[in-house]
Amino acid sequence: MNEGRGNSLQVRHFYQKAKIPLELRTVSGKTGFLKTIQFSSSQRDSLPVEVWGRNEIQKLGRMSREQRNTFIQSRIRHQPCLILSDGLTYPQDVTKKAKEWRIALFVTVLSKSKSKVQLRKLFSSFKLSQHILSGGLLHVFGRGVLILGDSGVGKSESALELISRGHLFVSDDIVQIKKDQEGKLIGSAASLSRNFMEIRGLGIINIKKIFGEGSICKQTKIDLVIMLKRWKEGKEYDRLGLKFPENQKILGVDVPKISIPVAPGRNIATLIEVACKVFVLKQKGYHAALEITEKLDRALAIR
Image (cartoon, one colour):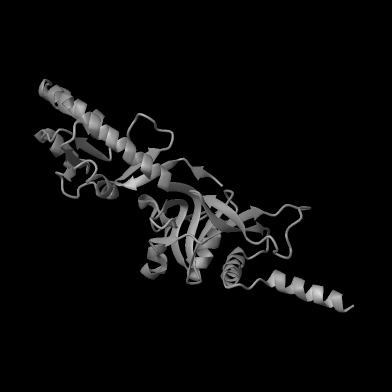
């Protein structure tokens, strides 16, 4: 399992969260709102968005046209958005290039230094409540199922078969996880990979185009983790299920986890379906392993 240290946030969601603490307003409508801001837990002083103040605007005013174009290109061409402090007004050539490159432009009445302080606080709060995992996420029998495992173990192929059986697809390969206000984990796909799945031998496929819009679920609460592990000869596996399920900690929340050994001839999609059914029954208070253990104890007591 590969856990991502980075987080991502669409510009539109950033604006919704930042407009009050930063007194932010948009000056470019919804241009660039679907772009993604990538930020990492390893970032300390640097910010994942560009912030300009009086210094940048005055510097542009002293430049030739060629120098201005070079400066604008180097500073904002690959940025998800640009924030201008002190309630200043964007130069016309900046707004023109931002529109061409689909970059969101925001203005705040705060100073540049205060804006950066607020942004650091804001992104720190995002880091605490968001996480990225490498795996697949589906909605199976009314439960959000996160499928994890080593590369090449069959996560995507199993997910594809589950979708063909009528279960709902959320994400493949990259799962964005956030904690809502009630402390529940919500999983969704990254904006760029939404609806897409990679299958070895077929390449990238569009689940929505193949199976229809009814096969897609934009996000789901994560109720269960399925860990796919390669079968190892000679290893002892739990045959009764008395240790079922374990727990997987995500963002400080314990999520029930079931490990399934993967070997040739085993139908992983069917095993995942059954694991979900068993999990639902256990939530209702029924545990098959305990029932058979109790029957065995009674039989031995009679003797």
